[in-house]
Length: 254
View: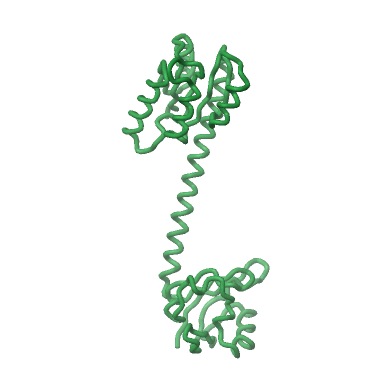
């Protein structure tokens, strides 16, 4: 797949040189002679695409008539925030370099153009663009996976109570909410022992925590209405690598 690049410069010779250089390097090049033409091209391309970045990388001349490169950079950063800009100028100016970078330009290079150098810089810009895009894709996949797993947990028939290593409740499912009369929000942050019967907590809970597994083991919960609910638990006590209880998963029967 060809990499797309937009080149903007009012110097036709520079446009021709850069076009040939990047096409030879395998890029799909669009070259325009001014800022207004560049914006029209970008906005037109955006309308036809499912994403908002028609050209991942742009090479922009700073000194252009009408809208100069710095003003164009501001507009592109606003309308096409994912695009990476490599700024060019024939006039060595620390002020313009600082302004370019402050406005979010990826890099600042001076003319006469060093073809080898600009190819490396553009290649680096493309690598950054692809990396950012891949990171976003992975974040979205993780987010969807998290929502999917949470939906499964919430709707399990089994009772699920998850805690942190200090014994504070971090998540419960609907079965637990129905059993105790609490919502997950009400239980989150409470000590696990706060929903266990007092006498049970002092004796049998310690034994169950130590054993790690149970079959028809009696367990006493305290519901929201302060009523004790005696059930029989079959399941597993979940522990971390250091042996700290982080929750339990299992079934309850009366």
